[in-house]
Every structure is written in structure tokens, then in C-alpha cells.
Length: 172
Image (cartoon, rainbow, N blue to C red; front, side, top):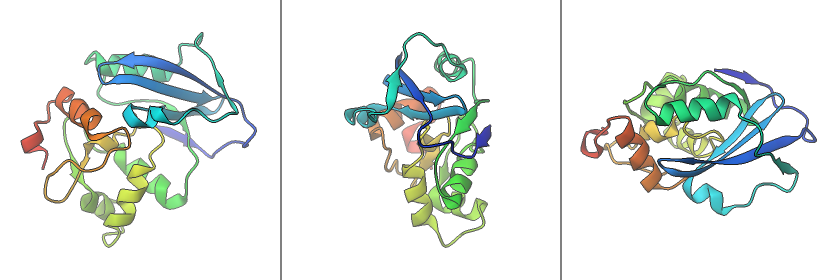
């Protein structure tokens, strides 16, 4: 996964909606890369006013998401155009290292980025992940093995983990 520094705030962001086994997704991209993938409850918020709807383009992200949902892809190879702090970017990069069908806790992620005392801050950064599914925040669970927080809603998280073969009682 390649991440570019965020582009200009005036850069054009295009978006479309895609149907998936976990419901409708909103996929947004710029000329620099993938900007957002929204699921579940995230779709309750309208897209920003400066985004332009584009239902004509089949982007690499859309193709790879379809492959993922078809069971033909376990990892994504996309250029990302993400806007976040250095800390958030480190957490998001660590998300990409959680293997398909496995889970990690917030505390484990904090250790992986060299900030073992920052599990709560890691949780906040995971919650601000702009490209859910692509950077698999659905694979992050609580220290006690419970499914906790997911910006798209816990039902979407459960479906994604089940699709990857993770049983809820075995998530920890």
C-alpha cells in the first residue's frame, strides 16, 4: 500500500456508491489515490459539498473491493490519499499488517508502533481510519476479545470478520 501526502484542499474528489455483501459502500478518490471508503452508519453523513459524484469510473479500489468480497483477494494494493496526523498514519499503516482472517487488539497495535502506553490513542486513530475495509480496522478488537467500536457499525464489522472466517467467540 502506498500513501501519498495529502493533496491540496481544492483537489477534486470523486465518489460513487457500490453494493457489497455488507451493504452499500461509498468510495471516494482523487487523482492522487483513494480518499475514503464509507460503510454502514458512515453513509448517514452526506458526502462533503466539494465532492463530485462519478458513477462512470471503475477505479482500482472498486475492482479490488469486488475481488475481496468475491473471496479472490485478501490484501489490497492501492495508492492512498489520506489526510491525517503522523500518529494516525502510523496506526493506519499498522492496520495494513493485520493478516486476513486474524485480529489484533488496540494494545497490540500500540506496541507494534512503538507506543505501548497509547492503546486509547490508537483506538481513536483506528476510529478515524478513512478507508475502512482497505485498511482493515474491522480486524481490531478489545483486549478482552470483544468486538468493539466500528465507524460503520458493529453489524458491518461482524459480517466482515465472518466473511474472513473469524468466529466472533474466537475473535480474541
